[in-house]
Length: 213
Image (cartoon, one colour):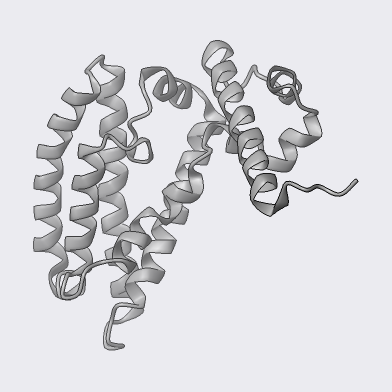
């Protein structure tokens, strides 16, 4: 019998299934640890087949970092969507400020349990490093598209590396303060001040490479 729900309903069902799998995986990871939790356990908890889990999440790490696409593309998206006359650095700074105020999970506001799970798992720690590297590459590509062709490739790549490094440090700082027991509000307040100083340094170091519109 044909599915009369239409593509919209089918997509909604897929998204609901994906979210259910992700939620159950996160719960089990927090309870048992990432390394000790199996795909079979996640499938049973979500009420689906193990194959369904791997269809939505090809690798187990993807279950822990279910927002990895948003993470990887976040810096490039801020540059690409900047306002007319706004420099890439100003756009990145504005986007970070907004994410801090919203305590965005992509920025690292994931709670103490999740932060501890990541830091205690060699697999997740390695995956997080890869995601940071991918984000830096995406940012370099976005910065290259903003130039007038006069900037050397090494300048663009170095600028992306420095911008990405600051974001890595701030991400790690959010995790550290969270694990120290600070509330999300206290973490946001502290890191907002520290981010201002870090971005001020970038403006001094990078100059016209990413400051000019």
